[in-house]
Length: 62
Image (cartoon, rainbow, N blue to C red; front, side):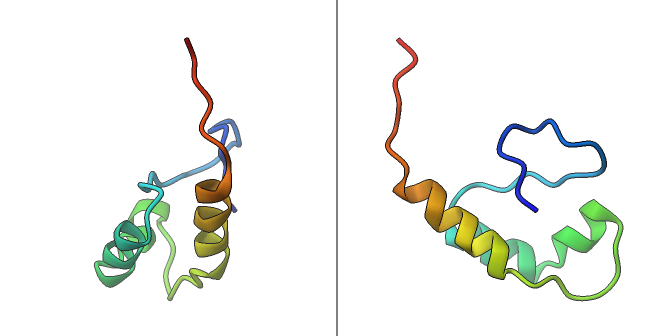
């Protein structure tokens, strides 16, 4: 589950919104350590969220 607002309860893991960072995290098995879970993570939902975020227009906070 991707929590864009960072407000959901429970453990979380930060990830840069680029595929390369996801690939590195998967290779290093960083999610298992960060989330304290065993087994492989299915990156399908994370990749979809990264693509969705990349398609959103950038807004200015000026």
